[in-house]
Image 1 (tube, helix red, strand yellow):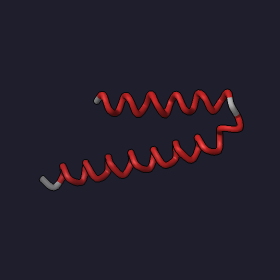
Image 2 (cartoon, one colour):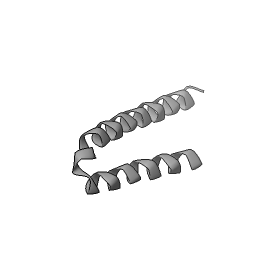
Image 3 (tube, helix red, strand yellow):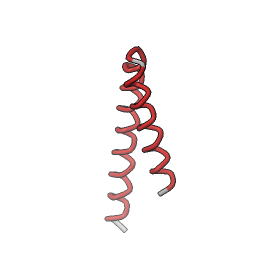
Length: 53
């Protein structure tokens, strides 16, 4: 679970930074959206793979 904790820390840090630098918000929001989608797809694929074993 170290990888998941690292991802959560990074996304949390980016969100924290965005609160302090409004000009960064657009790029950070895009990055967070992409990360969120990648994580969702990965989790769904993993669960689908596990259910078919």
